[in-house]
Image 1: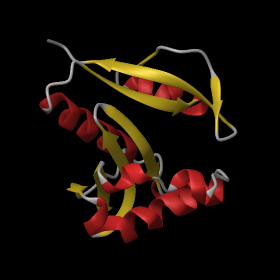
Image 2 (image 1 turned 90 degrees about the vertical axis):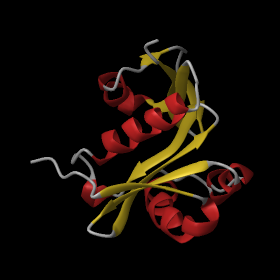
Image 3 (image 1 turned 45 degrees about the vertical axis):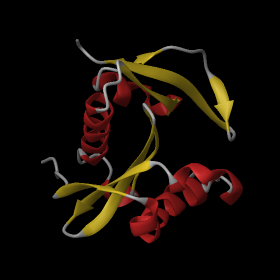
Image 4 (image 1 turned 180 degrees about the horizontal axis):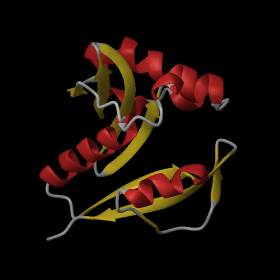
Amino acid sequence: MILKPTEIQVVTWREAEAALRAIRTPVFIVEQYVTDEFEWDDFDATAIHLLAMVNQQAVGCARIISNKIGRMAVLKAFRGKGIGMALLKKSLEIIKNKGAASAYLSAQTHAIGFYQQAGFTVISGEYCDVHIPHVDMEYQFVK
């Protein structure tokens, strides 16, 4: 059975910093060995942030800067339950509503299939970003 988030909240860094850090720290810094210096940047203050809430607990997040989706993470205990796809769909909805023709993201190579299921296509060769293999991906909105 797929566990659906009870809510995807659109939040600012100022109002949800603690919850966003509580997701991104274990996922990126602990599991993936991303440094603090790389993870926390000036873009957080102005980005659109999403929080996936299950039973009033923040379990996933994403961030949108212009038409680029990034910092998407789901706590380990909640993976494989549809939360990541819910965050991705809400991100795409927000970007489309801003009038963009397409959305972009930098995908870790192990997650390419996940993003392809949502309609993204690979648009770059593989490159290393903070010691993790990535590719750039694009989603074209239907006109």
